[in-house]
Amino acid sequence: MVFSSLVFLYVFLPVVLIGYYVIPYKFKNLFLSVASFIFFAWGGVSYSLILLFSLILNFFIGKGIAFNKNKKTFLIIGVTVNLIIIGIFKYAGLITETINSLLGIMMVSTLKIPKIILPIGISFYTFQAISYLVDIYRGEAEVQKKFTNVVLYISLFPQLIAGPIVRYHDIAIQIKNRVHSFEKFSSGVMRFVLGLGKKVLIANNLAIIADYVFSITPENLTFSPAWIGIIAYTFQIYFDFSGYSDMAIGLGRMFGFNILENFNFPYISKSIREFWRRWHISLSNWFRDYLYISMGGNRINKFRTYFNLFFVFFVTGLWHGASWGFVVWGLIHGALMIFERLGLDKILKKTPSLFQHTYTFLLAVLAWVLFRADDFSHATKFYHALFNFSDTTLNDVKLIIKLNNETFLVFAIAVLGSFGVFKYINNLFKQIIENCNLSVQLVNYIKLTIQFAFVFIVILLCTTYLVNNSYNPFIYFRF
Image 1 (tube, helix red, strand yellow):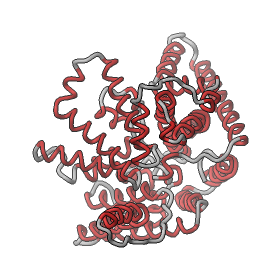
Image 2: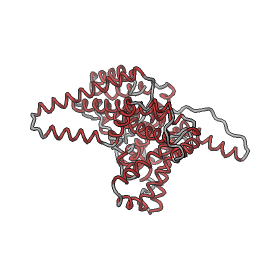
Image 3: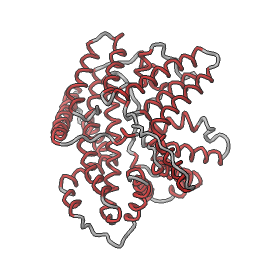
Image 4: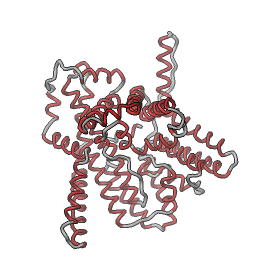
């Protein structure tokens, strides 16, 4: 089940919201835990058994860390088992493929293992489980004595499938004691609808262009379609993933939780370092807190700092997908981070802001090729098309047909939205309203009217789109 499905919007969510606010406060966590498990089980019972094993394991390991003198032993066991689980289900194929490639070179018979289906959300809930154990070990948050509360933290349905990755110490208090209010609920609805619009109206339409271009036989791909395709994907992945994060944050508010932000207009960054402070913030924070700092961070020497950075981005790429394309994507970002620390950032700061923005955006765009391509060979040929100036004309009839007025409108909205123009206009409008010396009641009425109109129009448009179009899952579901 996905947030941008009619079943979720018109059946699951209304039923869960009504049930949640009807039952007594002491049963809310239990109810939400059961609802989250049902949400997850919708994708397959076998997936649920893996999640259930993870929940039981981390519940008892957490208690072992909290109430046993050998807490470090329990931590090592817990983290190791969690990594083994994700290693088997996510990386067994890549490991076998790599070994077979080496064996093939040596003319030795290859290994054969059954194909393992990747459980939905395993990368996200495994990282949250590790956060739970490490935060208890460090004394940053108390252990949950009730199994229900552990289930709620690790498998809360708003962020179970594709994040944001919520660190345990950020939400531990809210599990037992959180505030519900009309203001929080209404802001949650607004945020959810904003994310829904990003996904359904923007990302899905951009996907039509990106998917078509990346489906073109690499040998037939030329300069113009290649650039149109990767630009479309650049905005698609932002609106797809940030849209999901907005929906998760909004749902969290509806149930009383304050989930931290996951995106902050990354495409306006002036450096790759800044880009990673704005893109998938929860993942960056997780790797900083639980891997980079544990490896020594920048406390030892410069060489160790650069090694730590490079290794973290190697793991970042590997976390995103079990293929060498993702690994190279991560290593490219890691190398750029190191170059900027070595002095490139000082040079950049002496250049005009426009150059800094262009530098960062262009590098991010080029790196996305590795993220979207079918394999490393496909990516290599795609890069060749991007820089092959021998044929720059756009003569692909199918692509020209797809580039209609609606598509250009979506591209325009994507550019304005991802570069923060709409946020600037919204803030400017708020200032104008506040400076008009209107009564508080009138100001509130104007705000409520605009919010209601926004919610109504976006839901209506999204519903119409979902009724008339096929299933299109979130990109980060596969991670």
